[in-house]
Length: 370
Length: 268
Image (cartoon, rainbow over all chains, first blue to last red; front, side):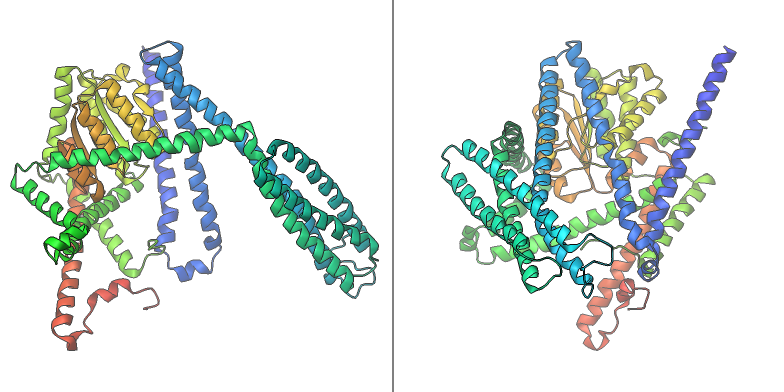
């Protein structure tokens, strides 16, 4: 018994420590934002806090986003146990868990696919960036016989040769992919035209890259600079048409079609259907509310009638000033009521926020149970 | 308008006033002063609705809907705590569907505490606090499905709501639940008035917890907010008077005391 009492008292100490830790963390978390808010902008501008503020705010958001795991765990536990032990309504739980798993799987596959495509597109963009960088570095090292940049990058000729071989490798890769997409397209005119355009762009890039080897690369003269600029421009065009091609190719993959079906085809439309239910519910709720039983509901009915008639052109036919009355109702009595509600709720929220920040709670509301 | 990033001197003065009023009330409470809190029929109906569920052996549903962790959630938690305690005492089933995973953790802790306080910790079922979805209409359809399956005798809708408010409250209507709603958002209040038995408007949501618990700290907070509102009303009155004077006597249009409120630290 004594041991048990000690255990209980130990639990009490742990609970007190936990409560104290929560209070300290709440206070410290709040004081940063409080001080940031009350400090004049002119003082903040001169400190590093201004630049760090966004990172700190994002940090708080990141911490709160971890809680999404709690939601998934809760779903798995609640519905997993229902399904395993075949409790009442286990079929719904099974459908939910299956939906969750399929959605997670298809979203992951879609994410990995788009990530892979983005990295492939970046490989093409690198050709243009590399050509532009060679020009930039050579200009920095202008006057130097061997066109070294101050950062000690390799010789100009070596860099151009590397650009050439890299570009040719990428061009071959894209050509191989184009022939694959042609097979997938199976006579789809738009895709075939897209591939033809892409082939033209690719041909142009290959020509520009070929001219690089014809030039002398001891220094960056006007001819060389123009050749590199042309490579850069054509690489950008190829990257853009390649991105369209990848999107087209990705669209034909199973993971992408599954994702589109589940998210755009099913989820979004189900959400829209739920939203559409509002139309029916508004009518049902309005019928209930407008059954004139009291003076207040009569007043509400009259105001609603004026607002509705003022909204439509028929209202103007009945009485010319109907739209003006509607406007007055919305802007004067309605705004006054809205502002009063918002003001009251705002003040109440402020007071509660101060109390929460300072952890002023009594036993009845979850504070110390002493 | 994106809100105020840094406080102006007038805002700081108002904040200081809020702190002072709050601490003044807590000081009075410590000395044994007791505030009176007016009757709120909607809050009185909560007890009746839970009692009705006990008579009929039906479940009780409570949702904080789109409420995230913040003052509104804490205001809702006070009411949820009180309801959960009664539910535990009457050995009823409690359903707390959740939209926000962060709020869910806090809500679960609060309900567990309420069951402990009622001395029925063994009746607490963590699965009664169920995460539905963080998507607005997916949550709404989950809530509708839940209510149609469980057919609760009372449904409480407290917190922040948006377009789904009517879907949620209509679901309660369809299963014949006695409904009490509270929202600080005036746009949704209209929908609740049409579909619920009782609706708490605006700040009543914040006062409900104090009313139910009669906790001196919470009642003191309500008293402080009422006094703070008097300051706001005084400022509005000064604004109205000065605007009227400027309109009637254009030669006195320089008299704009409320311009002081928008003055920055540089006096501009």
